[in-house]
Image (cartoon, rainbow, N blue to C red; front, side):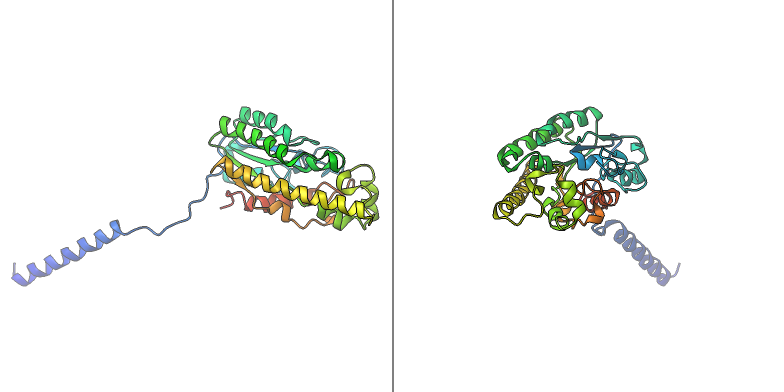
Amino acid sequence: MPRRWVAALACLAALVALACEGGTSASPRPTKSAPSSSGPGGIAALGDSISTGFASCLVLTSCERNSWSTGDGLRVQSHYRRLLDQNSAIRGKAYNHARPGARADALEGQAQAAVRDRADYITVLIGANDICRGGVDAMTPVTQFRADVDRGLRVLRTGRPKARVLVVSIPDLYRLWEVGHGDARAARAWRRGICPALLANATSTAPADKARRAAVRARIDAYNAQLVAACRAYGSRCRHDGGAAHKVRFTLGLLNPLDWFHPNATGQGRLAEVTWRSSGLAD
């Protein structure tokens, strides 16, 4: 074979080798790794009447099919329904242990139920009843609220250490008073004893009533700060919603027309939307 052909073949072989080396050793482009979605263990909701979909079916009782967390109805694109789109293995594995009237001290028992369910994704929304069950003096002290939340989260961390936990901020109840106290229907419903610490004498401008509402608003902020801290202490498997639920600008159109306090189906859908974005599972 002529020398020039040998040289040409050698050059060609060298180019091919170089191209192959570049294809196998070049660093891959960094990608954002999305958190894994709920495993086969499914989803569990812990908390109070908000997570049970209370009054969202135009009856003053729980309506779990409209729950922002575990609902399986068609009117609310809940976390469960979104997870089901990602993983069909969780079908039928949506457990709602939230209870109307529950305070933070109920979280421990609810968490034990979620552990028994072997839930892999657990939502926690609690605190409204620590505010609302009675007058200002009856509100749960901040230190006690934190201790109750910690006990509940400790059960989850011990019993389901690999589960993902979403801690949701308490919605802005003061906002409900702002948008509803001038509406005769809402003011009339609130006189039946709904969240008296905040909503009693809803139309009053007396200094004592203003001070009472300000105290409630401050307590909600204090609870929300403790929820952030409790989730941080839990570790990497806990995510806080970053205040997403609290930032929802509720209007009367997002409330049910029976108590003008709990979200209607549209309001539940709004909570599902904003908390899903902050869950780390939407990617």
